[in-house]
Length: 166
Length: 96
Length: 96
Image (tube, rainbow over all chains, first blue to last red; front, side, top):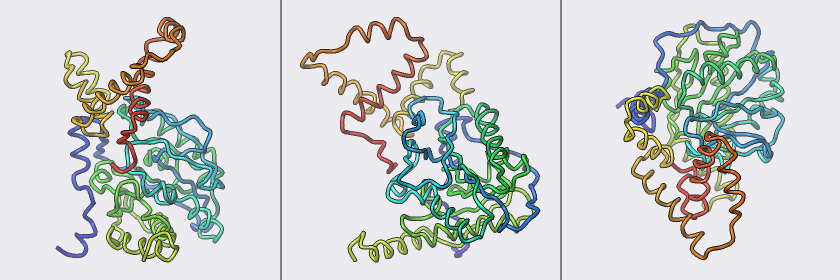
C-alpha cells in the first residue's frame, strides 16, 4: 500500500453503505455538481463564515432536539466572538469525546478568530451557523434547513464559507 | 447544505472524515482528513494542526477549478494522535 | 431511514421496519442495543415507582387530556432518553 492510498483510507470505511443499509434512503447521493462560485478578491479580504452540523449552541438557548425520531430542522446562530466556555453541544450521534475536551476539534472557533486577527481572512461574519446532522427527512432538510441557513449566511454578508459536516 | 450556499454565490469548502459520503454528496470543494468522526480539525489542544486544516481548506477556494473536488490532506490519524499526546504531555495534561 | 421509507412501512403495515427504526434511534445505530435501551427505560420507570412515592397525577391526567398527540408522542421519546439517563447507564456518552 502506498503512502497515498494509506492517507486516503477513512477510519470507518464504507460509511455511506453502512448508514444507508440501516436507514434506507437517508443518505444523500447526487449525480451532478453545482457550478463553482468564484471569489473575486483575495482571501485576506474575504469575510468568512462557518457552518457546522455538530449541534454546538450558545448555553441557554433551546437545546437541539436530539430525541425526535425524524430530526430537528432548526439552526442556531453562534456569535463568532464567543468563547468555547459560552457554548455547549447537544447531539448524541457522533463522538464528542474530543470536542468535550477542546471544542476546536469540531467547532474551531478560536482558530477562526485567530485567522481573522492575523489577517489571513478579511474578517468573520457576526454569527456562525449550527444545526444537528440527524435528519431523516432529506427533502425537508434540503428544502428548509439548507435554504434557511444559506439565506442567513447571505444576510450576514459572508463571502466565503467553511463547513464541517459532523 | 454546502451546495445551497455555493448557489448563493458564496465560495465554500468543507472538511470531510468520510470520503465515500462526500463522493456521494458532491459538494463543490472538500478536504478529506482520515480522522475519527467528530474530530474534523484533529485532536484536542493541537492548535497548529487545527489551524493548518482550516488554512489548507481555505486555500482550496483559490485553487480548485472543477466542482466536486476532494483534496486528500497528507496526514494520518496516528500522526495527529502522536503529536496530540506530546502536546498534552507538555501542557501537563498527560503524564510523560 | 428516510422519511419515505418509514411512510412506506406505515402504508404496508410493516411494524418490524418501524420498530427496527426506533431501536436504531435509541441504540445509537445498533438495533440490538436499542432493545436493551427500551427495556432499560421501562425498568427505570418501574424502579422509581416501587416505593409508591407521591406523584402529580393531576398533571398527568390534564396533560393526557389536553395535549395533542404529537406533543405526547414527542414527550414519550423524551421520557425514554430521560429515564435511560436517570438509570445511570447512559450509552450516549459521546464515545460511539
